[in-house]
Length: 141
Image 1 (cartoon, rainbow, N blue to C red):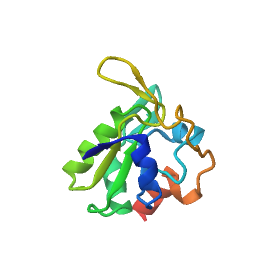
Image 2 (spheres, rainbow, N blue to C red):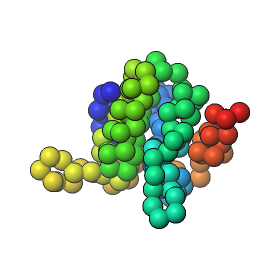
Image 3 (cartoon, rainbow, N blue to C red):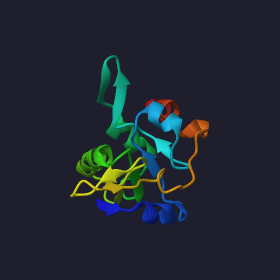
């Protein structure tokens, strides 16, 4: 896994490297990196969130293990966990967008702006085949 900045992520998107948003379905629906696929690391359950038991399986059906892929979340924690799980499953070219969509904090607690705070383009209407329900159905198909 390689950690990348939002600048690097934006450049790679221009090279057609896929971006997988591992935030929840509702977070993704509220706004995401344009063209992002949504495969949540955590799913919403009554009373909160729980690990997505289908995460690795859906990713394995979606993208080859040797393809470069950007993984992003809200602040960097879920993407790091998702990258660790995918590395364990044999993925070799993972790019973790560490500041996330909503920003994070550095080692000294200072804010590090994410995709949204930097004023980058945000999409709210996803293509139907990029939302989690469609990706899960494809994996189950």
